[in-house]
Amino acid sequence: MSWKGQLSRNLKELRVLFCQTSSASSQTREFVQKNYKELKTLNPRFPILIRECSGVQPQLWARYDMGVEKGISLEGLSEAQIAKALEDLVKAGVSLKG
View 1 (tube, rainbow, N blue to C red):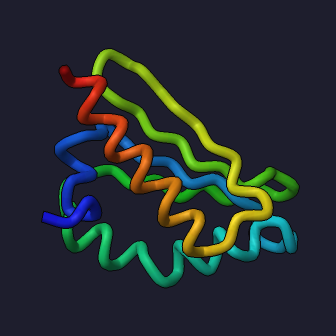
View 2: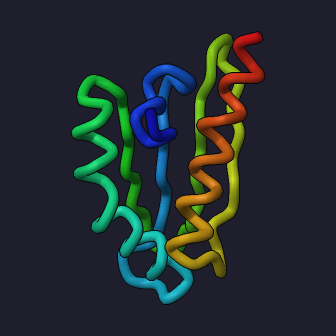
């Protein structure tokens, strides 16, 4: 199974933060537009929270078991790099379960 279908197995929640208008958040906005539907289809009951706030730097936050959270700054990352960052967060959930 692809890592995209394992969000709900390895994470408790995913949050994506970005600014609606800034150029620093443009790749993050594009990533959400292109990938949200697939991620939600593969993980229908999993909470994927999209948070837009004026002036905020783009970030990706994953919440794991026992309230453990990991965040990554997405500023300056391409769409492919954002996907890789998300994949790394999902795969990190496996080691945290152990």
